[in-house]
Length: 377
Ligand code: GAF
Image 1 (tube, rainbow, N blue to C red):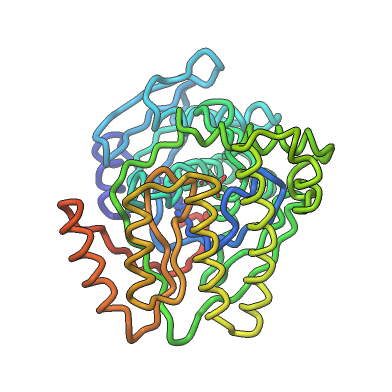
Image 2 (cartoon, rainbow, N blue to C red; image 1 turned 135 degrees about the vertical axis):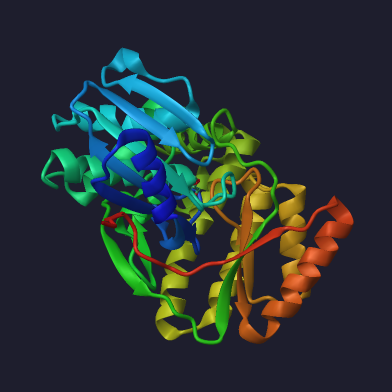
């Protein structure tokens, strides 16, 4: 990928200078807890967005997306926002850096990536983190700390892309570390690296190929439900609520909002249980909690879909240790914790059964937990 990007850059803009990358992410457990001030357990993966970037001495950005085969130019003022969604991520990052009092000057860029789009692996966070990292390195002597780099990506989603996401994806993309999951407290941003090399198990993603699009999706509505309930309970966020509090206010909360909050409160505890289980090397418990999360996301939070529920059922039938829908939902992948000896048979069965029912096989990705944002050259 690197050579191809550099070749394209040379052809379009002459001379190369620096190349940056940032990763997609998985999340073992802790879904839809980030914007509720709760805990998450993501890790960056060995699939990334990579960009060659060089200052151009102009007051505009010129950028070519190799994968979409589109070229866009935009200025750096608020009114210069491009129309193309992919370019808005880059524009948003530039604006958020500038709004924080840091510097962005005109630059040229060519980028590409190998993170499957719409699979729930946070290709957008990777794009944001890659450019946030580049802007910091090229124009600001790396004065912006990593927490702020993650917040720049998150604000880009809020202010330029219409998704009121939490901090998990950008944090994982910026802070990712080889072979480690990150237990992140999304309220304080305290984090701890958890070595994750489960001997005898593999992490497998099965991509349903159902389109996953958080913009204009009910994602923001889920967040609003949680905020309404927290308000009714008189707490800053659902992180501060227990089931007893929720039950005590049952009469003041709609049935739908109640279910959403019930899921979030349960999930908060599951992340902590999984951390304890990981410390003991107890992968059976980890897997059990993953199934519980799926059940919650499907029946209470209602962000799953028929195809992902079916993949989850197949995993259960095959004796897979843990399986659940991963990411924001409304399509995308399941994440599966599979014993080595079951791996091949599970994948074969999942492909066959899924294809019989939906006419196409799910895509299979084996993932390696890897480093996050970095300068490659
Ligand atoms: C998406 C969002 F971007 C994250 O912030 C998080 O809420 C996730 O959905 C669900 O856990 O990836």
